[in-house]
Amino acid sequence: MTVPHFDPFNSRLARDIRNTLSKSFLHSLKDNNRKIFQLSTAEYLKQELEPVYEKYIRTRLKTYEEVFAIIARDRLDDVLQQATIFWDHGLYFEMHELLEPVWIKAEGGMRRALQGLIRAAGSKIHLESSNTAAAAIMGAKALADLEEFGDALVGFTKCKAIAADLKKTLGTVSKSSGIT
Image (tube, rainbow, N blue to C red; front, side):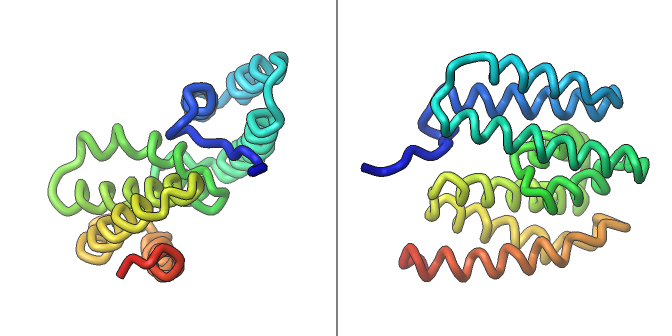
């Protein structure tokens, strides 16, 4: 018997949990009020959920607390600074959600670079759900965008590290899935 994993691509409950928690966390950052995500996670933890969902919620709560504290301590108001912290803590879906409104308004190279970051996060999200083919395709597109347009993200020092991470991930994914 295989142990179920948290899969928002194939489980409506997982998708709802992920989306609700992400929205509450971003709202908490915007309002500088950690109670928003704390209440959101507490509402889910009151329910009798399978261990896979409870583990995801508790892990997210712990990570949200850490990231919120860093952003508050360092007074990181810039979206790209926040995206760096999200990436470093594995909050890929939240990073995607954080960057999307900025990407929609951006133009030119900046828009393509942001698209690369969003795709990089998307690649990691697919990988978390063992969607290796989707992770590889999205990761390759992200890498191309970041390599060509990454310089448009002035002051975003994490771009090269994310590109290097993607290259490493793509190499691993390609070998394990037979994708060339």
